[in-house]
Image (cartoon, rainbow, N blue to C red; front, side):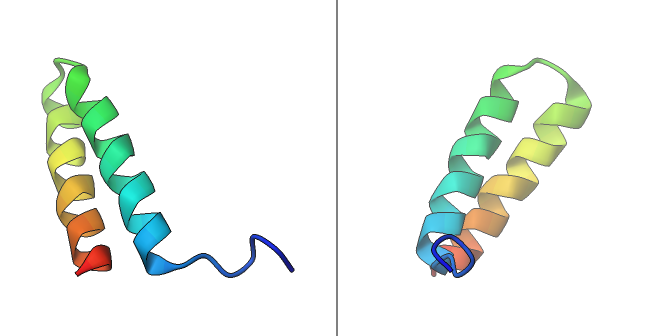
Length: 46
């Protein structure tokens, strides 16, 4: 059962980190996805 229940805080942090990694790539699509992931991650934490 370990790993089935993930706290929203952990999901938010992972999402923000993934969004920052996506922002590293200079593609417009990745840029938009990165911004969306960071906003989504912040919404999960707060």
